[in-house]
Amino acid sequence: MANRALIIFSVCLVICSGCAKSGPADKDAIAYVNKEPVLKSELDREMALRQRHDPDFKITPETKAEQLDTIIDRKLIVQKAMENGLAREDRFVNTIKAYWEQTLIRNFLEYKEREFKDYIFAAEEEIKNYYDNLPNKDTLGTLEALRPEITKRIAAEKSEKLFEDWLKNEKSKASIRIINKP
Image 1 (cartoon, helix red, strand yellow):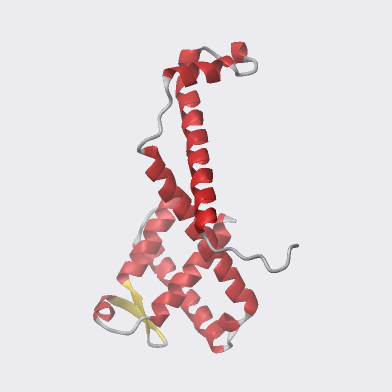
Image 2 (tube, one colour):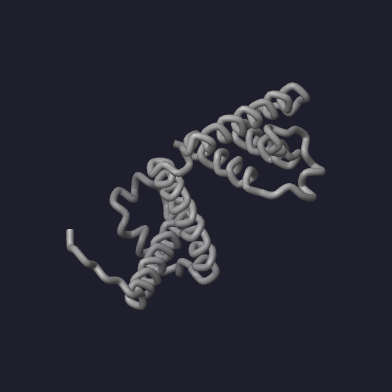
């Protein structure tokens, strides 16, 4: 799934870079594919991404050349797909829309989590109560040993509750009209 998302993201980047007009960025071009520039920053981003996913990956002139060749191949394939109208097919559009929505939702949830984090805490009484209600707590460990994990769980539960309340509030303010009930 992660590889599929990475491929879709890469294709989106190539499509977006193909839509850009030539200008100051062209001075950073390290190659052209049918008049479409491959920018040094694009290659650098790909190399950094690859190294993040594989800490053993070594950046050498050879691996840079291989990555550049991969970018060129992708640009060629995307250009041909565009020429053949594949970007206008419902299947493609729906896939991109679903990926875009999932990414946007994930990013928003992370945003709200950061927002909630500023005022979420676990009181001592909540931690003790949580521990006291754990099944098999004797085999899990002492309260002090489990305190960090319990604190995280309480914070996560509170964050989830705050988000549910926020969403309920937003839903109550929204104009929602169901035409045909399923």
